[in-house]
Length: 286
Image (cartoon, rainbow, N blue to C red; front, side, top):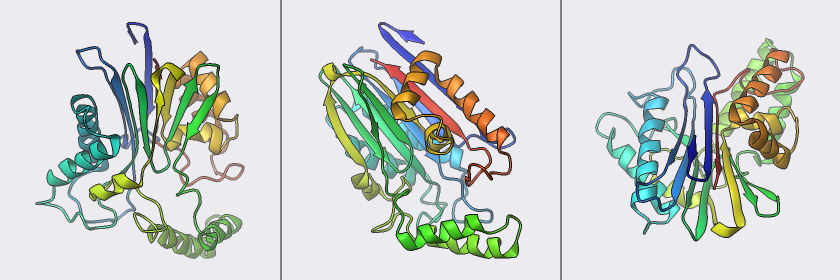
C-alpha cells in the first residue's frame, strides 16, 4: 500500500493452518495526516489444559491491538507506556467479570508499538518480538527486549539438558516439564520476563525510546516466528534482514522461513519450540 510518499507492507500467517493466527498487526494513519502508529502483537499460546479464561488468544490480541491502535493516534498527550497500560486495563475490564485474570496463563502477548509525527519516532518493545529502525545513512538498529533470551544460567542449563536427550524419550519428557516449569516461574515476575497480560504495570517494564523523525527512514516489526530468519536459521544479521525486507517485502521473508522450517521438520539442525510458528511482519518507510 502506498500512502503519499509512504510505503507500508504487512504479511502474517499462522504456523498451523488448522489453528487461528495468534499474531496481530496493524498500521494507523489518522485522517489529519499527522503521523501514524504501528502495532504488532504475538499472542502467547497457552499449554494444553490451561484454564482461567473463557476467551481465546486471538480474542485478546484483537482487543489489545485495537485499543493500542486507537489510543496511539487519539491520545498524543500520553506516552507509549501510558498507552500500553491503558490498553491492558481496557482489555482486562472487558473480561474481568467472567475470567480469572490472576491465572498465570491468562491471555497475553508480546508488544511492539511505534508512533511517529513530524518531529519524532517513539518506540516500545515488550518481550521477544523485534523492532528494526533504519536511519539516514543506512544504519539499522535492532530494538530488543532480551529478558526472555537472558534466562538465569540454571534455567539455560535445563534447556540444554532437554535438547541433549533423545526425542520421544521419557527422560526428555521429564526434563522438558522441569524446564517449562522453570520458565513459567519467571513469567511476569521480578528478575524474569514480562508480557502484556492483565496487569497494566507490565507497561513500565517495556524497552522504550525516541529518535528525531528526520533521522529515521523506515521501521519494521517482526514477531518471533519471523525473527527465526535471524535468530534460529542464521540466514543473516539484523541489517541483512532489513535489507531483504526492503528489497523483497515481508511475504518473501515469511516464505523463506517456512522453507527453512520444512527443510528441518524434526528440529534437529535448528532446535526450536515449535516446528512452525505464527509469523507477522510490518514494514513502514516514513
